Image 1 (cartoon, one colour):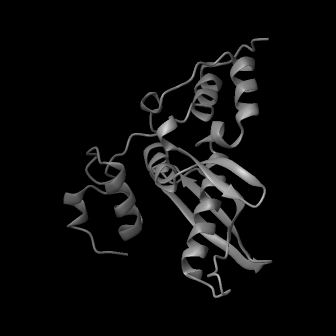
Image 2 (tube, helix red, strand yellow):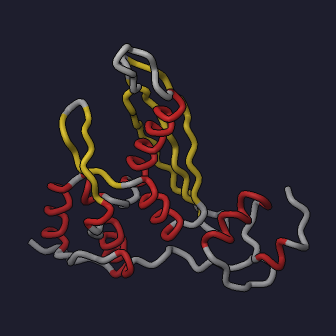
Length: 196
């Protein structure tokens, strides 16, 4: 059954249920079995490409039964600062130990839990949705009669512009500028501004 969509809804659905290319999908052994997941670098790349002004913070963490569990918050901001999307979710990682029971690298285990959490929160924005929810993905494709959308077909939400001179800037420039100055400026204008 095909549902009739507005132009905006169709774009939203296509962005949310685009197919993740197989080179980014990997198998991971977890307590419950072997599952498909994606590399954290892919998730970060997609966040930079789709939502250049994003931020991720760990809200809480704890160790439970040999697992590190973290609660994270992913915030995606519009360039004009008028809109934010916030997603929260949990992630975990096993505390890895040597054969004699000593903890190997606890900091690395915390980073793994944070990465797992970021992947899960990003999936709520449609990044690797098909990997984490394959059955739902197939049903949505049929319901909305959407073709697989390749990553290159997904455009960033907004054009990145320097707030002072209006020049186009890259996602990396915008991310750096937002972190250093609190706003998005091109490299030339950054040289004229005092850091926050």
